[in-house]
Image 1 (cartoon, rainbow, N blue to C red):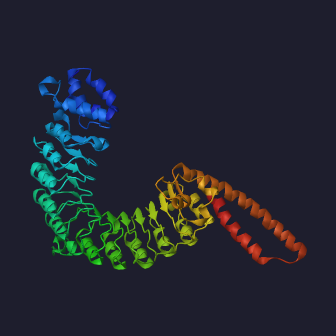
Image 2 (image 1 turned 60 degrees about the vertical axis):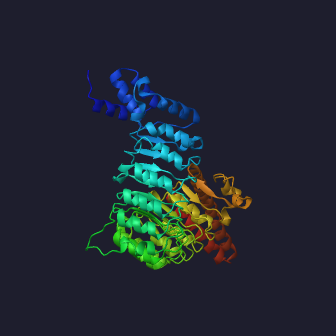
Image 3 (image 1 turned 90 degrees about the vertical axis):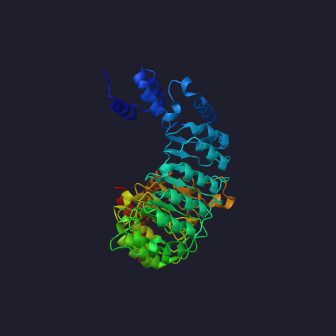
Length: 503
């Protein structure tokens, strides 16, 4: 029976799970062989030096000496797993792959500008739509110029240039990219030496921008945004940056509320906004962020120490679909902020590290609503030293889907009773950090929850008996100790609530 090639490929893609099964399909007949090998070689799995050598040897053979032209089948190459073995000459071997769609060279620190030139020397970049060059220290602007000249398809919509940690990258590279690739979707310029001029070029020419990361680019300030195309007057209800979904400006210390005012006016559908360590922003910025409304899902405001409870409360009213919010080291925030966050119906992760005003009332507010029991997954409370065991036990028992809880540097949890449920501290930590490390994750959270349940039920029964005995003793001597009875009853109310949660 003759099966059309399109159907045969779909069968192989969806019903043949492992590479070894695909290999056996390739051995059945010539018709099956081509399509099975096409899938096998679409994205070769290169995980060690031995596989890399075999792969290079196959590519070095002339097409006439192989059963099939393997180089023409390769669409994606990921060399990050063998980064230490990649040199300039290695990339020359891949230059025969003329249908590449994606190339990942993360961490290939032994290569230089010449390596990229060799890779594209035989027109290997004509269909390239994505290249990852992060964590490479020995290349300069020349590499970006080579990419811009050799990869005409980078002007298409589905492209992503990642240039993380390029200290030697300058504005000239960004100008070359935006000139040749005006339809860039994702630009990652983390820890690069660019200035406001790069931002101005990006906003002027990349109208379809979907993701922009310029964290740790310390030469950028408000002018990169407020004096760019973002500030150009547009017709009413027209947004030229309507596609922008991710903006990361971590540790750009010189941006202020002016930047947030500018960007939220022209990019109203940002989903992920990272302002970590942008210490100059104030409550006014949160007012501008509120314009994003239901589109905002992820917000990082770590170390934004000027924001207050009122601003966060107002933000939660307008942006009520947030899934993740990090407020670490925002030391002006207190229990009212947590009470407002508890009302978010889709909140999954919350970061409150070093928010030292947080008390047990905030934790009880998190457990007030039944929906948080099935939504909250990760909670970071390290350094919140006012929290008690009772509050945390209520939280752990209430949040049934909790998979991560950090309680480092909280005194009441620095004892073997709870440390036995913690995961091991990282080896690079100092002795002091290892001693105070207290993070529960995965199955350890479940174990902690079971321990709290058994512990609280035991306390409940013990306190109930003590309360009854106290009343009998007081009746006999006719001298009731009201303060002691009040304290016992208060604890009984808390434990009764936990008992109801168990049920």
